[in-house]
Length: 174
Length: 119
Image 1 (cartoon, one colour):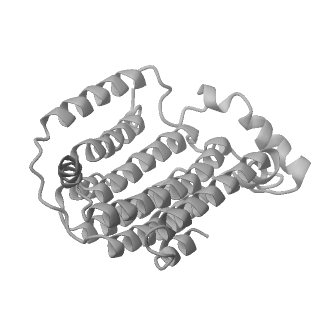
Image 2: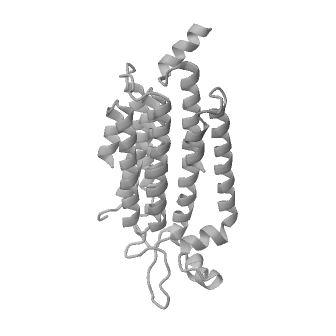
Image 3: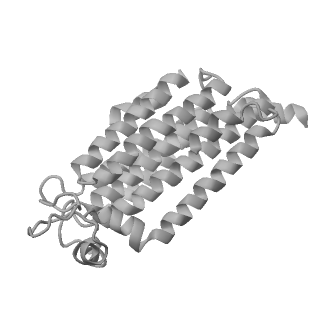
C-alpha cells in the first residue's frame, strides 16, 4: 500500500494514477479481511476498487489524460504534512495497543450488540444487525445522502452540456 | 511493548499524511481527488484496526460456541462511510468536469491564470 501511494505521487499519467488507486483500494480490502472486517472488505472491493475507479475513468474521459509536470516547490506542503503527522504520532502514544481486548472501544455498547443482537433480531451477522436494525435510521440517512449527491451530479453535468453527458456519472451512481 | 503495538496507528497516519500531501501539493484536480480517497481509506484502516481483538474472529455469531468476536461497531460505521465517500467522490468529479468545460484545464495554476486574464 505504501508503494502504491508513492506511485500516485510520482506518476503523471492520470490513467495510471487512477488504476493504482484501484489497486490501493483492493489492498485495503484484503487488509480488512485480515482484521476480521469481512463486510467492510466486500464493500471496499466493490465500491472503492470498482465504482470509484469507473467514476474516475468517466471523469478522465471527459477531461484530460495526462498531468502537466508541476512547477510548484513541494517544500511548504512537506513541512505542514510532517508537522501534522508528528503531532498525530504523539497523540497515538496514549492509545491502547493493537488487539487489546480491554480497550475502551470494546467495553461499552459492542458487547450488548454481540450478545443481544441474535436474540432480538434472529440475524447471526452482527454487522447486519446493527446496520439494518439498531441503526437503520442512519442507513436511511445514508440513502438520502446518495440520492442528493446523484441529483447534484446530474444537475451539474446537465448544465452546459445540454444533458448529453449526464449518463456517465449519473448512472454509475444509481 | 511487543509487535504490533501501536504500529497500526502509525501506518494509518503515514497513509493519511500521504493523502494530505497529495491534496495540498499536487496541482491536478483529479489527482487531488485520488489523494482524498487515499486519505479516506487511511481513516477506514484506523477505525477497523481499533475494532480488532487478538484471537477474535469476524462478528458473525456461531450459536452455542464460546467464541471471541471482533468489535462490530467500527465495521458498521465504516460501511456507511465508504458509501458516503463514493457519493462525495462522484460530486467532486462532476464539479471537475464542469471546471474543465468552463476553463479548458484541470490544473490549478492554469485556472488561476485564466481568472487573472478575465479580471
